[in-house]
Length: 113
Length: 110
Image (cartoon, rainbow over all chains, first blue to last red; front, side, top):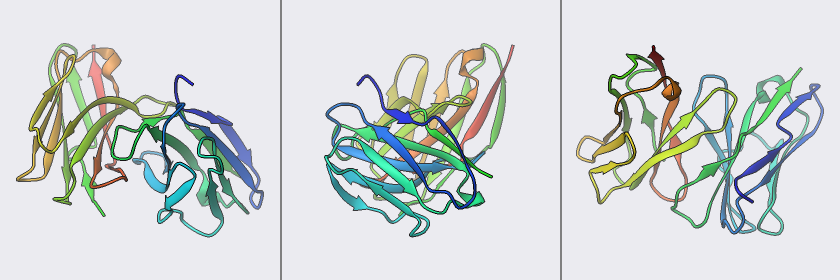
């Protein structure tokens, strides 16, 4: 596609619900990143994929967070048993190769009530 | 890892003036740097990048300066326009991962 596409753009979840956020990277991009951005803060790294391999998940805040990219293209970030502190914008970014410019999607805004 | 900081959280400039936004980083192994612009409700948008083998790079109305000795980079915007109002982030990469600062909110006064 022309850019990184994320869905849903907005999600309101009740505390305790599970959510799944989808990212469609730019076609052909090998590297895919997930970031979490709290209000008024910069993006914080969550996890990184190279093709289907999850090479770094050191930023995932707890074992309630899980990400996958089974076929090396679309990725899903899943948050189980959501809590209020999970409320943030979840940004996906991709690049055509490691060490190159990363391009962001518009983000998925999650509000946990 | 990497620690990225910005010198000013907010900056106000008159329309037509030049803007300078600063960023400091900690890891001397960092070798790739990107400036992003983020408007309200949108994702970060690429502005300009620079690699560690350069100390200056120019784009359209924007210039990035890199000082590896003091681990500092800056974004200069010439003839700032109202459409430049946004939050600006520097992103620093010592490898595959990018680390972001907290951002500088630029307000352009007409």
